[in-house]
Length: 422
Image (tube, rainbow, N blue to C red; front, side, top):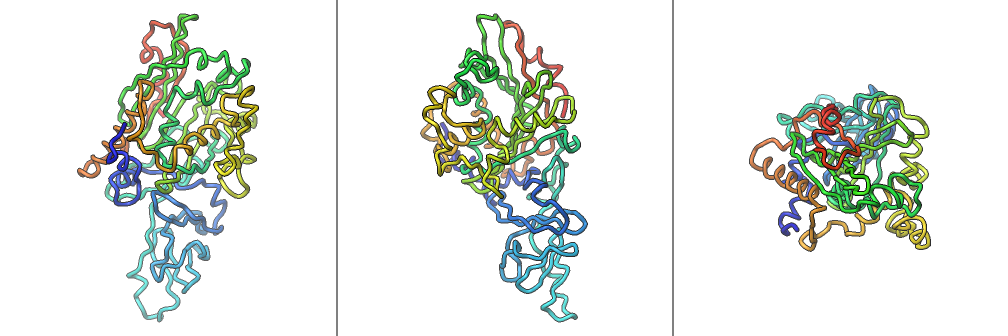
């Protein structure tokens, strides 16, 4: 349980808030590269950390991320003309480049130097991994560019998607790092589903023991499920990377093709966030069409699951996530189709910003407690003039999963795998 003060601190990420200032010290995803498919294409609205921004790809291909309001009289730059390496406000023709420099002011006399005194707020951007990344903090504190393994893979060797979630980002994080819920929320009634089925290790061992090891980037945590009939333990090692990443191992959709999957829960406002989802093969090889299809279909975030022209699921809170009560009795635990959709239904059901003064945490919530402590510490560190944890950490360990002897040490057993940097 959190105090009301801590709950407010940890869920508030707008400019000027303690955690909002901490978040601005990291590179963060602003949008998918596919949202700006070509040079001089239409600009796109972007919400990030409570700010209304506009993204555009100028003629030379560089992406700009600028304030929504023109500094002249506040007209939205969304309606701007994207032309000749700049975005021109259609109200009076003021034109700005990706750095926010005013490069043309045609409604002022030719001899005027007024344009040299005007700037449009603009944030540094970087493209990698199918994403446009943004840094919104002080220039002198800008950390190195993110250098995760999947960012270095060529197109076709990774998969990147996003979906809109209508609740506070922390509800998404806490759902993602909650290991025990997979034994229930995602359970299938059939016995043929090896991961979530009635005979799966998650169904046979529903109360995992959690262990957390702090790291430079956040923490490594292990979910240990004892399998007494086998005299073994099912171990799944995850990474929580500050400030909003989770990385996990996955045995893959095809036999013998293990993968790494993960999420980033990025605040739009305090009541909405984007869930970015990535997947790649552990050997870095090209993903098959089968793998890409099932990453979307099994999790409920395939393009056919989205409302046309958006990244919002068709199954959403306005239609109770298309819950099927008959299927809840015979097909799966929830009657909701798609793992991603099941998570979203529960996380959004908690309200826009959950009041954590009313909760009652148990031992299964160890990873959640650890993440909260890190986020609160990051807010305190930035307020004290320090760098937040992980901002200058360029990599994290890879995640892993395995079945090991019940008396084996999980950290030593999986250390060769987790020591592989990405």
